[in-house]
Image 1: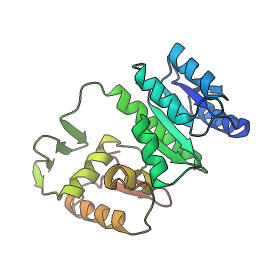
Image 2: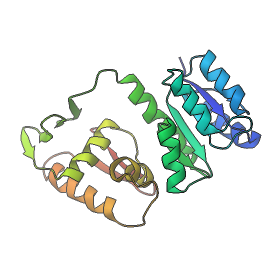
Image 3: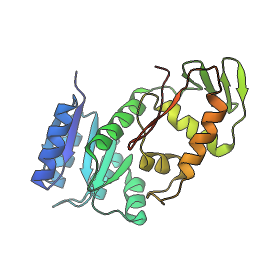
Length: 226
């Protein structure tokens, strides 16, 4: 069954664009153009995820997600807004949002972020060991092994590898990596991601072993055993 996504967006054109995108990507979208109406729908019906505009008539996005959480509803919420300052993003996440995207956004990234949220929702019990092919990452001992070979990781390398392995097979953009690993809600324009990915490659993809970390030019990075 296709995941049900509630789109709460007062701009009709944007709502239609998101709806068409999600439908084409295998989701079952439903639209609401008003904050109060969208909140009521989210409380009355079961949705797998919600895309939520920050500025809405009758009840703004912060109030919508805050009231959802107060009602005990844990539906993943992706906040989508033209308000891109760090303070705005922090407010959205602290109110109960699971992720935050700035308009205008790349359609593929919106779909990717929803897929990541849905995977988190379906994980259930927390994993103690992540596996991609013959690579293992022990989240308790914080050790990495590949075919029995121990890999020494610095703290930031561990966090980056953890994030990539949790989202194996998914292309992760620079923005997604900065937010998840460095907690930067903007792209500082440095090559810090490239440097850390290069270090991981040297440690993980040694000569004679099939490469696991791949670069998708213009899109980001993916770890995959395929």
